[in-house]
Length: 305
Image 1 (tube, rainbow, N blue to C red):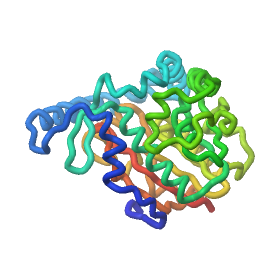
Image 2 (cartoon, helix red, strand yellow; image 1 turned 60 degrees about the vertical axis):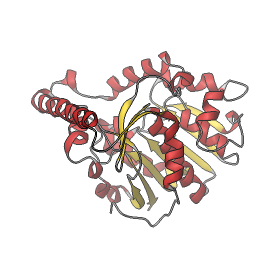
Image 3 (spheres, rainbow, N blue to C red; image 1 turned 180 degrees about the vertical axis):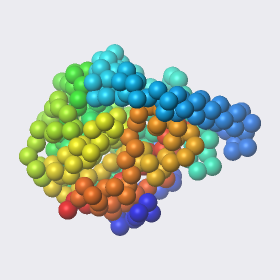
């Protein structure tokens, strides 16, 4: 299942590194003692966190609910301009890809996700696309700028996310930071007329069945473990053809630090092998992309039945 490649995207190693490299602050050889010490310390930290979560995580105050997600992310989106998120300067996190060990801005991984999602849209050629969990709208603006003949809708749980996206949506032109963040040159830097922003819950999407050619998530299901079953069912219901998910499926995070990090934070625990039960049949499954040490998202593209 994990090696499924019915859909070929043709993403080259050179494209991935060109997309990620501008946000890299430091590189380490695989044998670096400093890197190994950092990796061990990170692993110990989340091993302890997982232990305490398993011991006390049943307490309501420690659970990741949709209410706590709404409060946290609404504040985050409201307090941080999209331009600040995209800066190449600022705090870095430990990332790796194959034998490469790096400190990079966390947003570098999002840029790689956008590269893969753009390839999905190129191959599937949808006319209508829905992003579930659209946050501050970054993915929508970049993808709508690349695909000038596609209409995009974003649904977001938080008022802070909707407000942040609306601020950019109202601009006469996409900010330079957004234009430069796109892995590919934009064909339309005024895509607002093809973007619709909706506030709503992924567990009960306010759309008719089969409303969109392509539905996608990008580290949104990660926050929806409490409503995972309903959310996956809704993704399938509103898609008329395909669903793509960039998420930390458990098959890629089933041991070591990623497993401990996900369990300790009440994050997404869904498995690729569960998806056919929702009418989602994987055509492509790959996690061969740069990721943080703490969790490893991958791309799943599913055909709907």
